[in-house]
Amino acid sequence: MSSLKRLVLAGRCLALVAALFVPHLSQAGISAPNHRLAPSEGSLNFGDPPAVPILLTPPNGAHSVPNAVALQFAPVDGADRYNVQVATDAAFNTIVFRVNVPKSPVAFTAPFDNTTYFWRVQAVGVDGASEFSAPFSFSLFAEDECGTDPPALLTPLNGAAGVSDVVNLLFAPAPGAVRYNVQVATDPSFGGIVFSANVPKSPVPFTAPSSNATFYWRVQSVGPDGMCKYGAAWHFSTSPATAADEDGIEPPELWAPLNNAVDVPESAQLTFSPMAGAVRYNVQVATDPAFDAIVFMLNIPKPPVTFTAPFPGTIYFWRVQTVGSSETSEFSSPWSFTTAGTPGEPGFAEETSVPDSVRTLYALHQNFPDPFNPSTTIMIDAPVTGRMRLAVYDLLGREVSQIASGEFAAGRHIFSFDASGLAGGSYLYRVESPFFTESKLMTVFK
Image 1 (cartoon, rainbow, N blue to C red):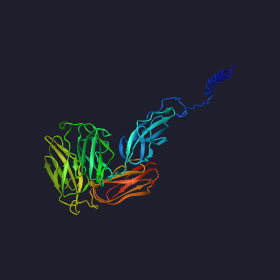
Image 2: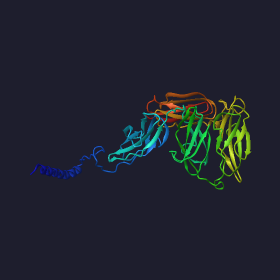
Image 3: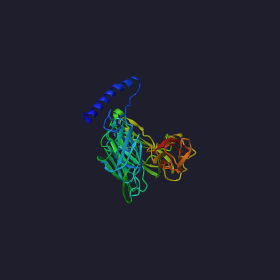
Image 4: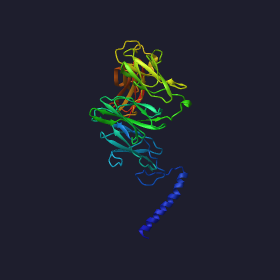
């Protein structure tokens, strides 16, 4: 018998012995080893591989992303680990970062400024590996040659639903900007732009071309030396058009002066959105948010209306009501502004005497992004001028950083916090003022 035949016969004998022996091991309570090959060890699979992961943030096409960003994706059933890749081209021929991790998020520090990056994720389980996800892209934030940052978007809030077809696009002024380019599109890549404007300041009126649709908007600062990059895009959805006799007539949306604006001229133009079905509008201005001390009221056929403030350095609250042919709306939610000049006349909100109704207008917003590494943004709304302190504490109550302290004007204040010197984990950030104290939780990812 040849040596080859002897080997074949020996193999068959071993297989027969194993087939007879393994069931007896099981009956005796002895577990036979069951080793499955990892994807890199062979091509045999014993089940379906995990599904393709879903990418979350940064959203596809995001602009002005920080150099250090957390790549987040949804967990997949059956996945033990994930392969994450980042490249500077959509074909992933130039991969600049790759890592194998047990879960999301993944900290990525970009090696190049002013660059668009593409990222994708693959799920790996005992039964194999999924396909890579379709890649997402994002562009870094870096100060442009124009010397100013993109403005921070304010309203409509990102992801807002049921927004009026006639809406006011509000954004914070960017230091050093001369003008702003505003774009609205029907897709996040801004391939279908439906509105664009070059304006000196916010707000910008926008009339949606269709109801019950989603719109994406972004703003670009124009500096003295040229145009800067567009900031991050936000989106909102409009509500379907409704007949006034079915759902009731609606109050206008206030446009200007901006809510919490300061140093407003003594003679100010109050501007608001025109409403379908409106015949006239009732406008009221008061020195208190409950409108017990009304100093101005007028019935007009259309906006705007000129208001001459009776007192300098005073906080005024204003609201508008739509009057239709057969019914009248509720008043709009009030906005406030502070006139320029030296305070002291009646109606000025001193630190020692602030009505409870004014205190409720304070707001400490959730930081964004969260979790973050190494920096995040914190916003505080203050309806009156006064002292304010913002600090960060660990979970034992020990202060680890003071972000801001001093006298702040009424309005929205935006602070940037850099946690490069802190260990990863959860922290509290807390605002304290004579009128308002609040804390929120944030997470440093490292």
